[in-house]
Structure formats: structure tokens, C-alpha cells
Image 1 (tube, rainbow, N blue to C red):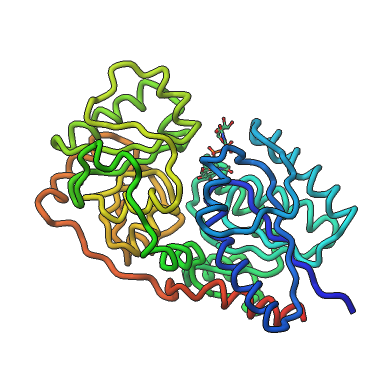
Image 2: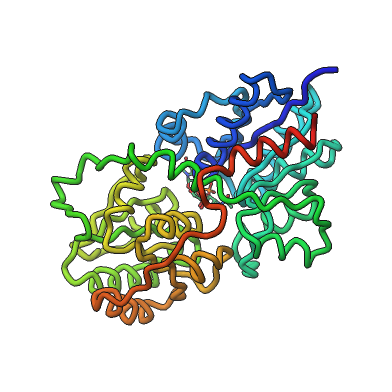
Length: 366
Ligand code: UD1
């Protein structure tokens, strides 16, 4: 009998840190004579070095075995291109399982293509829900989980969401958070970006901002109001804003940006998390970053109305402020008054999740 082959799908920036520990764990078991093999498939959703290649280099992820080079487009164009190309790959050379992570377009597109060819789907970071159907990621989560065979979850809340949807316990595995495996494995390797000295940054003496959700950045007028509130609220401290390509497009149309906000390129993993670890606080509309700030104990303000990661609020350092700039000032008052919560670490966010997933996959497939 031939060895089972797991297709590991990556497409966009937040996927890379989630698969790195799974690949390491699968390679370790293979070296010990384990039966599982894997094939790394990059859909090409993110293609810039700064959004993709840098992460492979820094996290020691092997070069993809296949690159589908799907590229940019509307939601439907991207989904369709990835499905057509991944289906072709599966028809030519079928994998035994399709393992997808997170909630990006590549996650959903490959899950659909695989399941329609009767290739079972494993979803890492399954079951999380914001309830906000205006976010493409929420649609991706719901569609993916509707056709997933094996669910790997980051929290009991996520497992409960799946149970409520009628999924049997034998298919749900609460394993923890692979993104945190990557963070803990790299904590000692974090390093300052080249502009650290040039901008005069000091530990605890600046803010990090990331915003790229359509609801915050696609309309120039409201984006400008948000930036002004951040610039004023930071009380003279520098604000470092690594700019996602989507955000860059709107920024071009926003004149008169606050001078204390320093816009920089998207940062590689080690530099970005150095900036986060040493920041006074992080202001973001990302989901993944709220998990990293929780583990590093850095105050985090989320400019969204919902979160699919409630443990970052109930256990961690995160607060959901909404998208109205007015909400920021109260939060910043509390921060500067030294009244931000300290937070703790969610269960099983311990750096061992990749190994748990590899062991379970071996049980399921061998
Ligand atoms: C995607 C994910 C989002 C994740 C984000 C992180 C979906 C639905 N969303 O959003 O969950 O938080 O990635 O980065 O999958 N672009 C480049 N270079 C690249 C990649 C994209 O210039 O390497 C441009 C695209 O042409 C497009 C824009 O950036 O105009 C948005 O890219 P896209 O992949 O559509 O979605 P993101 O907003 O990046």
C-alpha cells in the first residue's frame, strides 16, 4: 500500500505561520519512519515577496511543491481560479487528504475542489465564527466547515460552535493554535526592523497599527478620520503602520496624513513581531494579531464590531472597540492611565499544536 499524501494548502500571508509547525511535525514523524507524506501547494493568492516569499525564508518553510499562480482578482475570480487549478492538480495527481488552514479564499476554494473529488478535508482553525457575514473570511469559514471531515480547533468555543452545528465529537479535535507554535518557536529570533533607530523607537514608546479590512480602509473619508483619531490619541508617540497592499491603494487618495504615523512596507515575520512585542499597544483589524498580542501580553485594540476569537478578549489582552474613531479615545485614556488588563494565555496555546495535529492525522490515516 502506498503512503497517504496530505496536500497542505497555503495561499495568503496568515497561512504561512499556521502551516510551518504542521510541516515540521510531519517531517519529524516521517524521519522516524512514520507513514504520512505531504505535498505543499501554494495557490498564489499572495505573490509579492513581502506578502509571501519572505515568510517562507524566515520560517524555514520548504519551497512549495506546486504553485498554482492564481493571483489577484475579485472574490469570485480568485475562488474560481484557485478551484480550477487545484482541481486540475488533483485530477492529475490526487492527494489522500486536503489540509486547509484559516479562513482565506484559498482555504475555501481548495476545500470545495477537494471534497467534490471525494478527497477528505481537514481544517485547521475550524469552528471560529464572528457572525459577521459582510466579511469574506466568515463566508470562507462557514463554507469550509460545512464540507470538512476533520476539524482541528484553537479553543473549546470553536469546538462548541461545531457541536451546535451537529458535528460529532469524533470529528472535532481541540489541539490549540499553530500560529502560537510559530510565535513561541521564533520568540528569541525576533529582531528590530532596519528603521528602528532611524525612527527613534524605544520599547514601550510607540504604537503598531495594521488595518486592511474593507470596512476600515476602502472608503478614503472614514479611513482618514480613523487615522486622525489614532494620530491624536497616541499623544505624540510614534505610530508604526506596516501597510497592506489593499490599504496602500486607499492611502494614495488620503491627503494630509498625521505626521506621527510612519507608514512602512509590510514587514517580514521576525521584524513585525519584534515591533509588536515591544509596542505600547497595537491597534488593528486583524484577527491573527490579536492572538499574538495575547500571548505576548501586549495591549490590543481591535477596530471591528465583532471577533471570531473571543478568548483574546475573555482571556487575553484584546478589546473590541468597533469602527467608530470616538471609541478609541476612551481606550487610549485607560491605556495611558496604566489600567489595561494584563490577560492570560488560552488553553493549549503552548507551542505543541503542530505535533498534536500530526499525531492525530497519523491515527486517522494510517
Ligand atoms: C487576505 C485574506 C485576509 C487576510 C489578508 C492578510 C481573504 C478573503 N482575505 O486579504 O483574511 O487577513 O489576506 O494579508 O482571503 N495584493 C498584492 N500583493 C500580494 C497580494 C495581494 O498587491 O502579494 C493586492 C491584491 O492585488 C489586492 C489586494 O492586495 O488588490 C488584496 O489582496 P487579496 O488577496 O484579495 O485579499 P487581502 O485583502 O490580502
